[in-house]
Length: 295
View 1 (spheres, one colour):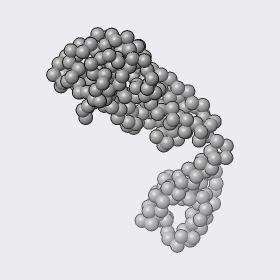
View 2 (cartoon, rainbow, N blue to C red; view 1 turned 135 degrees about the vertical axis):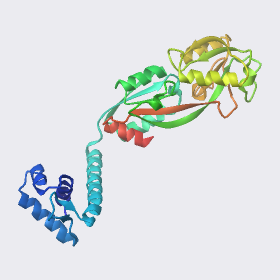
View 3 (cartoon, rainbow, N blue to C red; view 1 turned 30 degrees about the vertical axis):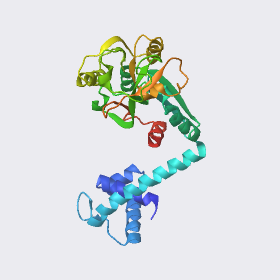
View 4 (spheres, rainbow, N blue to C red; view 1 turned 180 degrees about the vertical axis):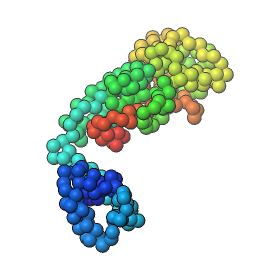
């Protein structure tokens, strides 16, 4: 049994014809027939019923068709991996991420991928959630890491994976009465001047609806002084004691020595933000395929 015999067998089975299989491989019908007979003799079974038109598989042939396809696919995968190991995976990977997520462990994920595939050029783009979703749909990015503020999960042709559920924190200035607390509940923020961080540039998204609903569940309408998707500006205003803000926990990462800023965890099962990775199902990029596998 050899690879060519498997390929010829699959071709005859799919075309229901020795003649069409011969044409596919630019061989004579006699040559294809000879190879199939050799395969049958080697296996000790009959794979085709030849007294029918079109040619039909025997029960044994039907079973072997599934296995033959799997063998050929595994061989192709093995050859691809061997070539990658010898020449290195090459190409590009365009990664978009929501504002603030640069403080997460995304850089570690990218670094690990780069160390394994140094010939892949990784380019990164920081943007609002709605712009990320639009860019992904329009082919500007290979993969994005974002809140699903645009309901991208329901879009046709998209694959996604939950990367993490990020706890929310309250950003406070040092002299705020809550600054010494170990944790807070959203109910306790009633009456506070809020600097509201929106995931999108429009300020109106499914993500906004979800988080604003949490205030309603807490029993009040938030006193929002400012809506912004610029995390750095919000933190600057908190430090200036203009107001406080509720932010995803990654915004507080690597800010242990931030001047006049204190971050207190927000309690509650719903007080989290989901970060998801999205990529198009029909993207043929091998770097993307390997990166997703690493996730």
